[in-house]
Image (tube, rainbow, N blue to C red; front, side):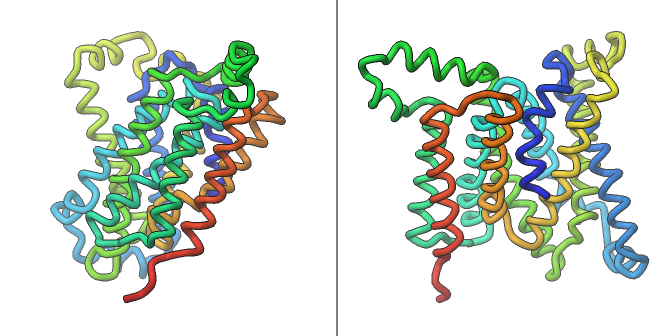
Length: 317
């Protein structure tokens, strides 16, 4: 399910969300929808589970566990929506895989979870694929030196949505923040109170604190206050269909918490490899945008790195 959400999110966002829409407003609505979904699923767990999880709950412990990740996720959300609308689907989801690098680093620093030598090689391959996705490296140019200008024009034609400053850089920033937030979330849902936090309750807490932080940031800045006074407020440029990508991403947030609980932040990143492949199919077939040689090679490298990372964990000491 998370892979499906991962693959359909970029095209849905570009189709149903106006690039002029307030990004903080979009993220805040997403967090509110995420809270509603989490609360419904949490109540659906049954009275005994709810009573057990709420026993001993305090605002102080909640803020310690979810406060900082909530701020990070709120920032990530704003950058992510910016990236969605200024990169093509494959480039966005390929660059988004760099959150695995960040998650591995922060899981090691915060939780002492080390990587094997093969896993470190896999992460290096993943970094290399990122350079191909964002255009720093290009293998296609090596095979088309005689027609370098034409090849460059062709690659640019296959990436009509991609912008470095408005798309690639925000996407990489969101991925780095996501790695830190994911590691903190994993620590919270797996280790809190010795038994860990219920994933739905934790997502509910994250959504609440993220919404509050976004609302405060909007009132704290001149541009934010101006956007609230404008006609339509944060819903300016929205249509009824704008709720589709927002709800899909909110559902993805709930699924992510479950994956953090039962699989871990680093493993989650590699589990999304299926989503990356599905994204390539979606972009080629549905959006009718041909993948470049560099994008195809980068996808292959991500698949290879995923296999190595999953199959060669560190040996038990």
